[in-house]
Length: 69
Image 1 (tube, rainbow, N blue to C red):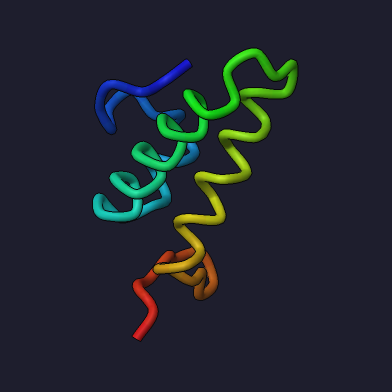
Image 2: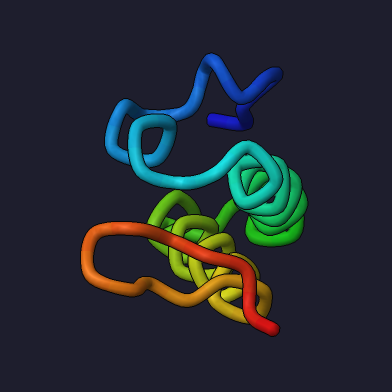
């Protein structure tokens, strides 16, 4: 289901991604959720698309996500 705010995101995302990356994830997830309405794998697709959006701007160094230079 779409997320209304970053505080609604799963703990794994809220506890590991910086605030801006959470914004990116939430926006991409919500958009993908709408685009894939009726697809039996709607949630899976939305999560994959949201992570891809985050990875365009952020990279993981060890346990920390940092914005790409």
